[in-house]
Image 1 (cartoon, rainbow, N blue to C red):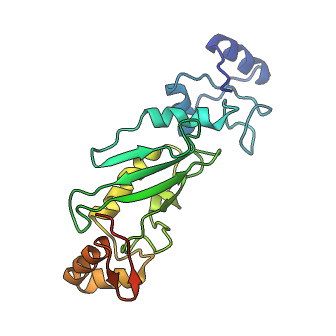
Image 2 (spheres, rainbow, N blue to C red):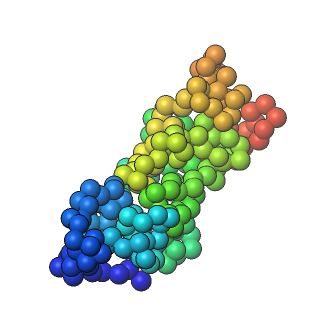
Length: 215
């Protein structure tokens, strides 16, 4: 259950816990997001769900924390979101991308999202459910996107990830590959790469690898 605390009560608690010292005013990106969602935060190590004192988390239920970001989604018309386990399981969902330009025009690609209780301090786990011929997505569905790895910051959200995935389809990058063979073809012969993409999306073979139709 999400714990809501009135501002005046929390100001008194902060003052008491600080032993007369002025409270720290600087807040993390995650804390600001909670404030925007109408929550009042407490500087209380006992209530903190993170690993060190001074970090503020006022949700006993991580789903409540994440619900605000879901409500803030601003999806492009080429994107849809679904909750296979029902709306009671917001932390696991699927996003379908249908690029409207570039090599993957006309294709339909499903990505699974698994959101950690540590969100937004930890990026969601994202995999491509659709087998795709792509330099930045391997045949097991692992995705090479910097904001899912070292460039993730708490200020980012699911909306940012979705637009990042769309950019991968509009501008595949041969310089940071997971599928090295596809990356080499894109680098050396973009026309052949385009033909391979169309063949894969049509349900054909690229080399010895078969693909299911996704267009």
